[in-house]
Length: 268
Image (tube, rainbow, N blue to C red; front, side, top):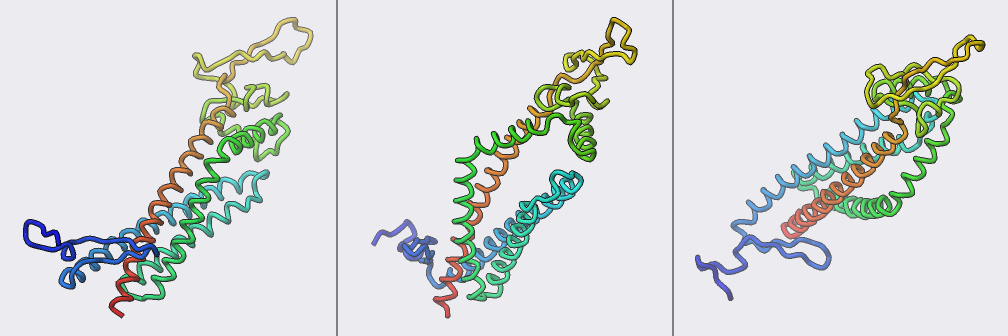
């Protein structure tokens, strides 16, 4: 038997081994077992707090997204928004199930938590793989959808108002062809009032067609479609990063709950 400098054997040291059944079995002595399990419950509680925060974040973002989408006629029927509500509340429920089961030592709740964690881990890994594989295709579909909105003066008034507000805030105009994407009616939100390199001259006929000259109107040269695509890429990467973090948290949930279930089983 290999001894350390204090004369302790390997079975008295704080170590864990993983069985093939993914059950974490402690090899602490009985004197330190209670302390180790107490610390583990605290860590497990902190994990569930992070899990609950993630669920709340999903719900809050979904509420904001739902409010924004409800103002646009073309996007009122989006089932994915309701799916996000379900995911957020399920995440909150699972976190409560794990925290309550750990501190009350309820074995069936921890087992149910473990099963849900394993199922969730499988779904998250699958979802992350799908996100990586279909990233180029999704961005291409979004770009084609933006191209399909032209001319912008033909979409609903609510959408025109929303897009005009976006143009004014971001200082851009049109989708990918600038003011030409608005057809015959270019809104004042395209007007470039700041001057500089972000402005381009847009020829505009006067009301009096007998005059041989044209007035020039200064509009934003930056197109909104390119900005939306860049933001979509950032958002897509953020979603992939969020899913990866959730995978890591879920794996920790599987590890901690397995250890707690095994401890309750041994003491029962």
